[in-house]
Length: 234
Image 1 (cartoon, rainbow, N blue to C red):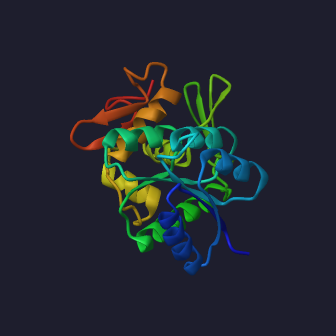
Image 2 (cartoon, rainbow, N blue to C red):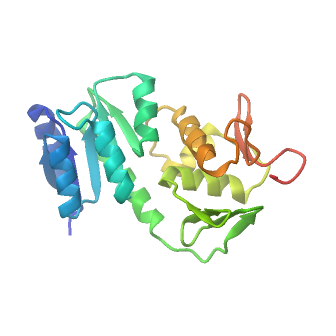
């Protein structure tokens, strides 16, 4: 059965191009021109991934993304004519998994859709790994859950993968390139600074004080590591 992609864009020409490219790539496509229509579709129909324009009439793309993410873990790719880094950061912090700036290559967009769907499938694959505990933080790779002080912490796919990657190799410094390659398995097209957005958001969720992190350490000019150089994380 073909995977279903919801395309949300108020420009008919863009919807037509994206729909044609996705159908040619073997996907079933559902489309909407408004944010409220998109939310209704996601609520009532099985959707495997959403391609979501930022600028929409009525409910804008940021709010649509936030509402979808509050109830569903379906991958979301943001589309926007803007190239502003602020929009990219806001999209990722609202829960988007990827970001494509117009004008874009339909072939590249299809590749992004396939890559995000592969990541989503990996996220549902169980492993035999035991939970990892550091202080009051517990990460369960099999269940893909994170607990802090006995309370569940909700992470996106990218946030969880970055945390787990760092946690499995305490004090080892990973470059942004290494972390992105781990996330995307060589299929990442975007800005490496997006890893900084994921880490910042991750710190807000797992650190006691995100402004003074003790779990995820920044190694200036290189990347990130879990825990202090000279000892345990906390």
